[in-house]
Length: 191
Length: 171
Image (tube, rainbow over all chains, first blue to last red):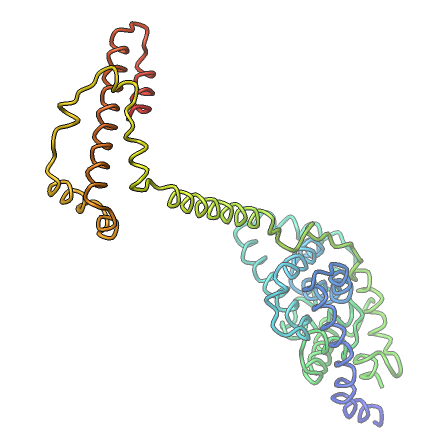
C-alpha cells in the first residue's frame, strides 16, 4: 500500500527530476550535431535506437525493423535542422518512427507477396514471436509501451521521458496493456 | 509492490513479468553501427567558383569600358587619322575627297548622332577637318574592300569559308 502510494506520489516529481538532465544531454547533443559534430549524432543514435526499435517492433514485421531503424536515423540526421526544440528530439524521432511504420504498411498493402514472405520468416521464430504477435494484437496505445518495457527493458519513467508522453499515460498504458496481455496469455500458461 | 516492478523495476519482482522479459528480451535491439553520409555540410566550392568568375568577368568588363572611354577618339586625334595613306597617294581622288560639304549640313548630321556637349566643344574648322578625315578614311576602306574582293574573284582557289572570313575582317 505504501509502495503504491509512494509510486503514485513520486511519479510527477521523480519524472520531472529525471527529465531535465536527459533533456539537457539531448539539447547539447543536438546542438553539437547541428554545429557539424557527427560523433554526437552517434551518441544520440545509441541513446534512442532502442526506442525507435521498440516502436517499430510493435508495428512492423521483425525482419524489417533493423533496416528501418537505420533509415529513420539517417532521415533524422538529414532533417535535424528542422527540429525547433532541441529538447524534443525523443518525441520527434518517435513520431518519425510511427509515421514510417504507417508508410511501411501502406506500401506493403500494394505488395502482398512480400508481406506473406515476411510473415513466413517470422513463423519459425520461437515463443518470443508468438508473444510479440499477441502484444501487436492489443490496442495501439498499449502495444508500444509494453514492447518498450518488456522487450527493450526500459522503465516507465524512461519511456515517458523519451517518447514525450506523460508519466501518468505511460503508467496507465502499462497496467492496462499488461492486464490484457495476461488475459491473452491465459495467465502465463505454458510459459 | 508488483506494480512497482512493472513501472520502474523496483520493489518485489513479478515472476510473470520477469518471465516475459526473459523471453521477449531475445528480440531486444542489437546495437549496429550507423553509417552516416560522408559529408553533412553542403560544399560551397562550386558556388564560390561561379561567384568568383562572375566577379572577375564584371571587373574585366568594367576595366574594359573604362579604358575604352578613355581611349575614345578625341576630335584632335582625327587630324592624325586624316594623314594621307599610301593608297590615297597612289590613287588620289581629290574630287571626291575635296568635294565641298556645306558646314551647316555637317553640323546637322553630327548633331543627330552625337551629344550636344561634344558638338559644341568643337570649333567649326575642327569639325570640317574631322569630317574630311572621316570621309578620307571611309574612302580608303572602300578602296581596300574593292581591291580585296577583286583579288578574291581572280583567285580560283578561294573557298567560300575564306570569303566569309575575309568579309568579316573587312566589315
